Length: 284
Length: 313
Image (cartoon, rainbow over all chains, first blue to last red; front, side, top):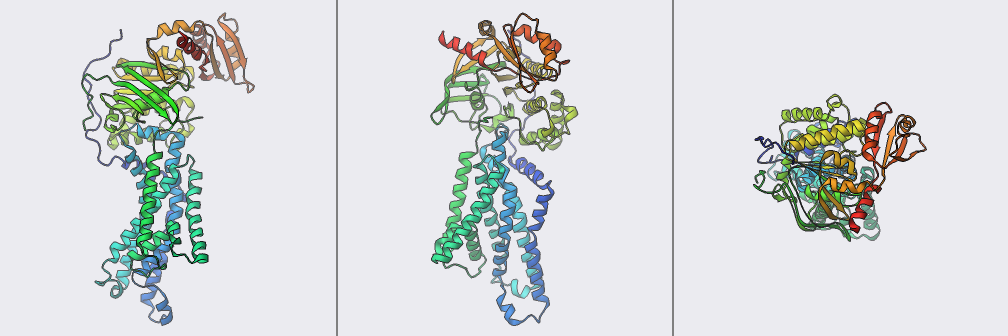
């Protein structure tokens, strides 16, 4: 009969659990992504619209001789930020595709998810950890430059931007950045969970987003059917953003419908993640 | 919730547990208890070993019945995994990380502080003889090194329960010996270790207590010697990858227990069929290093025949 060591052994693991259990997942994934020069270049590229808009605001306030007709054609107030986010969106789409495509797919392919789930983590912690990677990347190129742009606008043209009527503009910019980041991040993560290949997931996500946008554009133009914008995630983000930022809407559809469409996208993404993020059998 | 074990509870307990994937039953009404020490989970490929381990590791919920780990439900009790180490079969993950980064990252997930993560990671790498390769990327590790890195991540947080899925599969004889010695040492320290394998001789080198699993059911449990006796009637097949397979074959050619030998077309692989596995492994140990044996597999057909025999009884 084997005799086992019965001496007292000190229990050394952590008790209670770390409250932010997902943070090591986020940190490690961000570290790996940002160690790639090409990806860092993409992050820098995502700041170009901010630079362009900051120069535009500066020029508007510096050159009084700008022709009146040109001035009236350019956006003002919240519309500046709505336009900024519209330009920013395709770049965020690229960043999310390259940063998020393999986040879950690679773990499913290699079986790394088995190791994650053998730690004191729930599947929810895993999903939150991965979601935070994309949220951090997207917020770094939407929230940070958006608020900075708001600061620049307030500093350069206080008479135009620092008014009681526009007091909501700062929070609206933050909210729009959050909405954009969350929508893209959740959708990308869900598509990543549907595949075991990062490349396939990347192509699927980018193709789905661009494809639906093209279809929405064609249907909208040919059939003049306003609800067509509900087919495109980007169009919905822009429509809700315009409503948040007080910019005149491009479409006649009330903003509540695109907002509901985005909520549906979030719910569907969470459902996919709930179904797909689980231990897998690796068959070779 | 406390992570302390429930007093008096068996470390691993299956109570009428079943698990199916759609129409396929992977595990069928299993009731079993795994006590402290090393227990071998033995069965051919597709028998349900991995499902058994994954249920024990809380990776799946049982479709029916109950699986308890340290007295708590294995599914949905993440706090208990402070005390559990799991070594899964796949080994191709996080190829861009170094061995040290890999272990330290996983220790962070277990809630250890930064300095302690590094300290524990280094100690675990040292235990599995990978200290010299700690700064090399996992992608550049050999099969044996990856296997040992996986074992290191399972033991780095000093768990009380270890679940090892085919831990010596594909290892060369030297690394195989090293891993077997480590598992036995951990077992002697009082840890509960469940090791799955489809090779009887591998399990025999680790422990005498086995759980035999076949077609999703526990067929037998108890002393390995009783099962071992049955194997003598069946030839045992071993496939070896060697730098000099022909030299290795020359060492075996006169042994009376060798039934057949064949070479793969690529000239690196030698397949041997033997009637006396113990004697074969003894001869192999004498020649493995000089013949440059790097990998070794044993297909499970021989074990399958034992299971067929057991089922027929």
